[in-house]
Length: 369
Image (cartoon, rainbow, N blue to C red; front, side, top):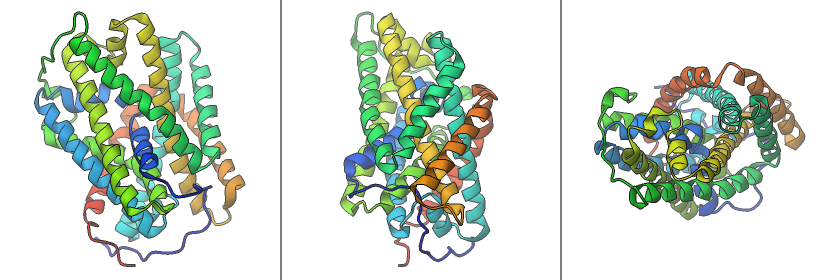
């Protein structure tokens, strides 16, 4: 591996976050970035954990520990490099051409994930609400642009508003499914052939790796915005633990509802509808909210990176123009179809994420000042 590149002073980038971000902001950003459509729908949890039966619970514990560790590493490196985008820490830990390749993969993934979220909003509008898909596409893009244009402060505010909804809904549905009227205990079916990898520890690591690609795009600017060491540690711990709690709740709900729920593209929506049509509508709203938070994180990270790379790009107005152009491009890409986008971009995210985790793990010792 080539020698890490020396740290350099960053040019003016996107609008930042006034004041010092605290642990709550870090935790909300961490959770809100990861819990997108795949997470909240239950598909990711089913494929990466529930298919391994009781061992899937161990996989969730492993993933939780890895989320805490790598989330903290991203924050610490963001602080040390004064990051305005993921490029700073990729350059610091990779250096040379490996860093440039990884930077390109992460940037490419952020665009693909953004397009996937825009397409996903259209799919939810069309399939669950009976509305035109384009209406969902445009509504999500407009809300995402408005949030990103407000800077990192607006991004964190959106995460703090939406994150508790998923945690409360996931835990509530799990408890209602397990102990409510007609509730059944988890039967923990085992079908590793349906998992992306046939060994539960490997599946847990892969799950963390591709989710950290998006999380790094928000956590590193938070570290660079002056988050203190204590807030970094507490925020990463709360964020990783919150993700683990949501994973465990969805895992138990699916295990108790299998095989009926897992026959659907959105298993958790089936679990919610089983408790009543109103609950189904509520969970559809939660799904849209989680798609929105992931889209916000992806667009902010992508626009930050593109704006930073332009020699003449600086300041709030230029950042907003970059976000508008990038968001519009994602709308066009979204018309390729939701399923096709997932199948194309997410394997690349796993590859980039694995490389990123290895590089981050190699930086446990502080970077030279």
